[in-house]
Image: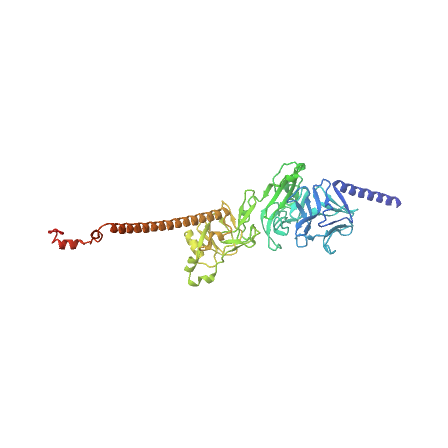
Length: 535
């Protein structure tokens, strides 16, 4: 019995030594009782052995801090994990808050008053220490079972090399680049084995249809279905099936792992990117480069008969693809952003069409509104009326005479689709051949359309300015010419009068008082010009 106890104790000691040595090899140990204070720059964050990653408080602005993990040597876009509340929004700690590693509860975050804000859970055993690994994974370790909690198990919007998503795993986008609140996009591994990208409701409580599917689900065979999404140390993202087969999500990159940092991120604009950042002496002067973008064209990727939500951009907005494969969102003519600081948000009509304006009859809409064509643009699905028409003008007129209609799309087969507010899933692409016509109020200055290209508005403004200046100059020159002409005429008559008066004073009175005779007077006086006068 004693011998058994000795053997058990020796085994336990060996196991403990292995765990401790392993943790020391992979990361720096943070013992229970160690803490950090938000805003206290005299204490360094908990860093990995290489210094590539750090755990601690990351400045969020306005005296608020994220409890986060970040690339310590990378100066921007470096946060890869942050503590989240139950609603998946970030935990924001005010200045003076404290994160402490405890034996009973693991990581515990308290505000300056001592109130608990967040803690790592679940914790199934007493914590001996924590470690920030060179993989970017923060791990809590106990003396018996090894890891009892790790940040890799609770990803936010980013995957790091060696990180996995298991069935039901998800990463969610931020609301914007600088706003860490949960956004409208997800990357998930579904229960059927498919890895998908999908939009979400607002507020985010329901997942809509996917705009990317890995096609790794096999209803007839679980062995042939996906089991994990793996992001390996070379920056390669793939689905691992139960059979052990790999299905690529991204292409093989081929860059050496030791020369670059890698991350896979579901971005606030819905694009999943695999990015790299060069390591080495010039790391502070580097920049992130997207190696792979998924899907290839996010603007045209959403197309289901039962589509919900606004699409990639906000309601009434238009999605177009930039040269880097990322979407750009713009309001159409006659619409402007509800939030001017959120270019990916919803647009509202500057003047909302009203049915009350139709009291004067159908023709009143023709006098109030006009149809403006938009090339290579469409808002597919969600039409409230469809009919065949002989030509595109008939389709436009139908919208003008319908107070609910704000847009019509005329198709290649003479289909006319009528749409009402709000417009969803707007996209602009060269492959779109249908004609879209917006109903707009007449006589509205182009300056009131914030979605018009700035260069166009500047050109119009410049042209308008030139016209005004030229008109003013022309008008001024005409006025000056009239004035000069008038002055010249007055001078001429005044001079002539002076000459006449001067002439009469110098000549005899008879010559100055000559009488003028008409033709008929001379004719009568000379008896038909037969007699000579003055003799």
